[in-house]
Amino acid sequence: MSHAEGLNVKRSGSGRKVVFVHGVGADLESWQGTLSCLQTRVEALTFDLRGHGESVKTHGEYSLEMFSADLLAIVDEAGWACFDLVGFSLGGLIAQRFALDYPDRVRTLTIISSVGGRTDEEKARVLARAETLAREGARAHMEASVPRWFTDEFKLAHPEVVAARMARSLANDPVCYAAAYKVLATGDLADELSKLHLPAIVMTGEADAGSTPRMAQLMAQQLRAPCVIFPRLKHSVLLEAPDQVALQIDSFLQRHPA
Image (cartoon, rainbow, N blue to C red; front, side, top):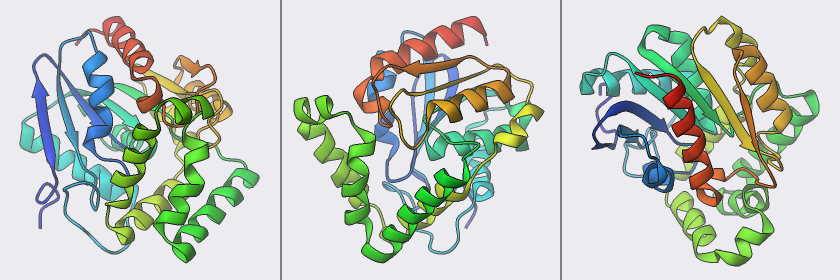
């Protein structure tokens, strides 16, 4: 099977070419709120990661290099020689890996709620969560994750959004979910980002326990890029504040014309 085969890909809109990469347990629908709030005219390419949404189920070890190769196959099939790249959570790590591997293909890089430069204590916590996932399964892992994703106010005001996020995540193949989470738990490219010389921006929530402001500021420093910290928000900024994320993407893309 080629890397592009079996991957659920969607192209929508017209305008500036932008690729959006989601995180663990999510699917391409994660971007719909942000896309609907964008003022910049874009042709958006979104796709389900392996084992997520409607994409092929691939059991075995996953790696950032595998996801980067998937992305390369998808943009080659689309005929996109150069594009803007936006990644959320694990998608942020995939975007970083792709930009490091193929810097001439990436016009700008946007990293949202991703990880880099974990301390030993942070590594221990996230690896413990990975062990819980392997031992107790996806549901227990997801239920423990919800408090880290959403603010209490959002959970009370929008229980249907939280429930839908849980249901979509649990619909993924559990073996693939665990393999992808392991990549998120162990991936860290912060030390390599100084090699990149392209316009970039980093965003995260002020109360995000997984992608902390300290991590975001470190990555921004390595990239020589601005860092945006959304007040009070946690990890799921795409669901809690799609308009704020879209506003930052709009402003960033306008500062760096295609």
